[in-house]
Length: 543
Ligand SMILES: Cc1ncc(COP(=O)(O)O)c(C=O)c1O
Image (tube, rainbow, N blue to C red; front, top):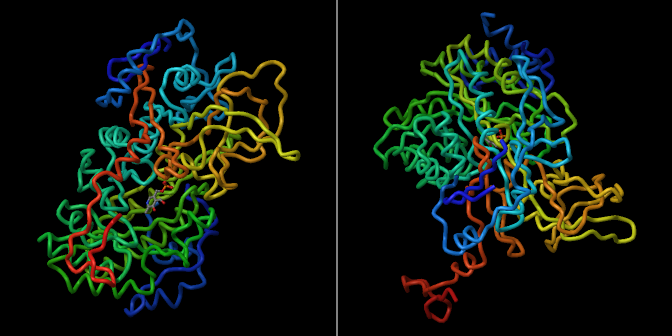
């Protein structure tokens, strides 16, 4: 193994479901006679019944390094054990893909018990990077995940809008953009980042329940699709269109009230959610759009049910409701071309080998509905594109017990990876190398050094007792981990690396440093005295 000049390590080794159980309430548009017919007959129906009645369905980081990192890089000496001849084997959670070939997952165990990423020992990467913990991705796995969606969508007009909130690493965004992704954005800065990464704005969708006017102006200027979330949101979109001097392509984010059967914190499409418009208000929105032909062009309908969804019939239920809305909206003269069914497909966090729905299962579930209405399908995957491409790699600091419980204390924490603390989420944990023969297996909580009892990465995990300094990974850390990382307890955000197609390792984000933190306090100035004064009439000071 040797470092590439630009911070790169190389290695020499090489059918629609049947039960619509998730529908809580059926759709209606209040206020028009044809709709009230639907309304009056619909409430007790399941989505599939509505469908039958109303819908005729034809059947490396080659990032300029800073001085200190360069000095680290130039002092690295390849060690003999890094001449790798590991055979990439399939992980325990390998699956058969549709064509019968084995689904290849990037993280695998070698026959001699070492965890590998694309055939490269994680331990070797640990020995050659400057900081711990760090995120380690497989670039080829990102490509494979994208290809699964692209292949599934064959025969449909579609946009794969990658949900940037899942992971906003610029290098990953550029890679996904080159593969053909659009982008899904939930803030003005995500929009700016998407533009920076070269995404085609006309394949981007701006979501959110609290979009600001200035963010909407940028979206309008750039020609991004905008999802309408509320009455005030529509007002702001109209203002933004006027300021930008451009018509905005709109999708109505309808809350279909479908229960995604996930943790309440990641459910977004049910009745009590803060997202989307209530279906009873749909007619109000249609009238408002009609009243602003110079500012607004209604082109589609959107829903997003939630995240970590593991049953595709939930998407079917939502799609049935959504095409019903689209039929009704079209009946009022709107030219609706897009159905956006959001993101939300779950992944196998438990590594039990469970066969979860694939992108193909998801798309096949809605395919006929989409074709029957001649719609362009937008999907917004985040987690299912990026989560399984990455591990958080940590060092074990030590092992302790409080008398009743045993703890493995690692250098990573809830600051770098908050999902277990925030959602009680399970992420699979394992050691990167075979344990010594005498190491007994025990049940441990895997915890970080952050001063919070909520600082755990895993609870009650059966693991061999690790030595201090051993490597330990938290799997499936590609989505909602680094993008949710904080600097709590001044644990600065970790660096990110990926293994490339040729087996080399490239840094794709620098570690944040203590010096970065200090910089926020440099050259602080008094606020100018534009009437900003305290009760004594003296100017307010920042310090
Ligand atoms: C509107 C919207 N679209 C897409 C996504 C991505 O979801 P996931 O990462 O579960 O695919 C989210 C995430 O919650 C979202 O809120």
